[in-house]
Amino acid sequence: MKSKQKELLMHYGSTAGRGSGIFRCFIPGAILALLVFFTLPVLPHDDDDELEVEGVIQALGSDYLMVNDYTLYVNNDTEIHGPDGDIDFSDLQVGQFVEVEAELQPDSTYLATEIEVEDDIEVEGPIESIGPDSLVVQSVVFYVDSTTEVRGHEDHDSLTFDDLEVGDYVEVHGYLQPDGRYKASRIELEDPHSKIKVRGRIQAIDSSSVMVKNQVFLVDSTTRIEAPHDKHIHLSDLLVGDSVEVKAILLPDSSLFATRIKLKKEHTDTTFEGRITALGDHSVSVNGISAIVNAATRIRDMHEEDIPFSSLSVGDSVHIRIAVRPDSSLLATRIIVREFSSFTGIPENDLSNQSLAKHFKLGQNFPNPFNPSTTVPVTVTSPQWQKVDLVVFNLVGQQVRTLFNGQLNEGTYSFVWDGKTDKGELVPSGIYFYQLKVGNQVVKTRRMLLVK
Image (cartoon, rainbow, N blue to C red; front, side):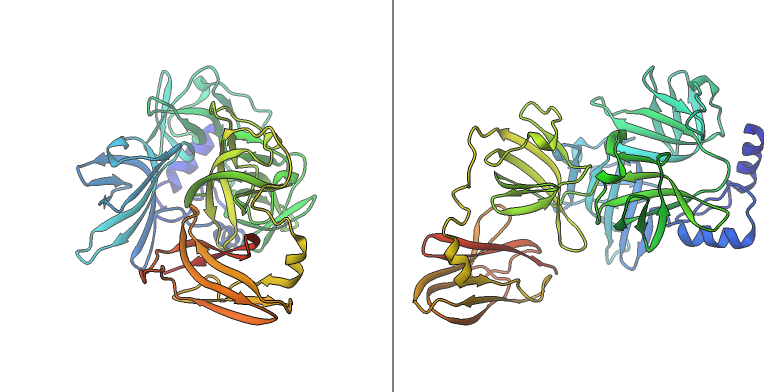
């Protein structure tokens, strides 16, 4: 079987160009067309003047890096993220696996707007070379040790590193080590029969299937479901909206069966600190800002040790990183506890006078997302005049704009924010919060998204 696989690799290996899927066996035309339809293009890809590229850093200069033969320049505005926070350009190393977003400049060069160093990577392709304790796949060097798991395309096919040969088509799971090298945690010899791979967000889920990219994938006990860092999870741990990669096969009845579902990490858009003000089954609120918590959310204590979500309590002081999803919902990508709380109860910034909620309603702004302006509705049913403040804050809790400060009584009101500060300066794109207070009591805080 191994020799047959190598023959097919040699026959088809040179037919795939940049951005195209690779098929390595003879497939009937109708099925091949279906597989092409379901297989997403791999990065990099061009979209007008924007570029996304992922791969190893091939070279580094004083103001550029090279990835997948693309020369990508950087400047002071380039955001660079490491596994544990923002880093400098000088921290990057040749051989690191990165994802880069770039924009085409008037001089036809690409300027990197964001660079993210990946600490948890999966690479699929033929083995290019093998050493005593390493192998190279897609130009990424992976080191192996006694803990590296090697197996065939069936879970029961246990192999050793010595069984692998140059040319074998494999999928390698690896992690960035403190010394800047990638260690292979698992190497899988791929099934020579073609598979379907889809990346997208879960649209629906039940006890036996998931829907991604409008396609239903059947799931059973043999489906391997993973979170980042090869953490085994269950179907019940997945949520609608989660970003996943599904590997599937086409069954004789034309249905799709998921052989593996991998929950993907999402890029952090912003970070802030505060105290946990509420906890749900799959959510956490910090300073009144609510974010989803899923199986990919990494939670650590003050000693950087992983802890379960159940260890968190209202009142804990935390540093939280969040990603903004396409539907404008927030996902907590990482929560680091700075100090555990020893008390319980309602936080002081939560609503204590519930009667206010009946008489003062803060509606969702519209449009949302918005650019350049949005309207905030407020409804008051109390006949008494009361002091009201309507204020806009940024993600770190800084007051940006006072929309209203005065007396209101019964009526329906609309307040327009033009995306400017109290000083008349335009604010950058991002998430903002607007808060309604009656007297000194917070009634409601809502979120809005400014896009430019």
